[in-house]
Image (cartoon, rainbow, N blue to C red; front, side):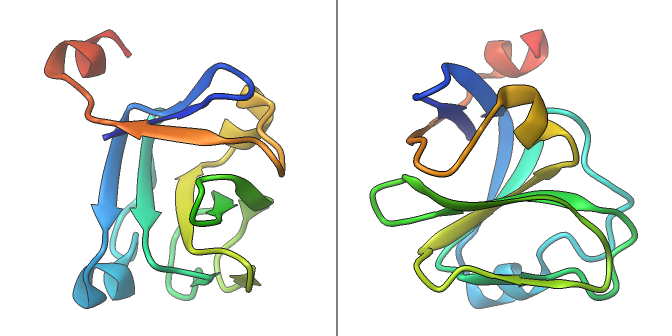
Length: 122
C-alpha cells in the first residue's frame, strides 16, 4: 500500500505494510534494524504505541476513522510510550518523514494500492 497526505500533496510512504491482526499488531516493528525511506507500518486499530525493545526511533501519525490526523510524534526513541485516545489507527514511519512532508494534525490522508512500477520509481 501507499499513503499520501492529501492536504499537503506529499507521499508519506509508498511501501506501507498493514498490521491488522492481533499477532501482527503486537509484533509491529520489533526485530527490525530500521525503516528505509518510503517504508512504513499502518497499525489498526491502535491508539497507543511503545518502542520497548526497538533499536531505532520512528515518526508516528495517529489517525481517526475518517483518516484525519489527530496527533503526530516526531522521532520517538526506543523505550518510550505514546498515546492518542482519539485515534483509531497509527502509522509508523522513518524519522524525518513528518518534517520532510510538512505533515501536521488536521491533515487528511489517502491510502491506495501501490503498483510495482510506482514502488520502483520511489
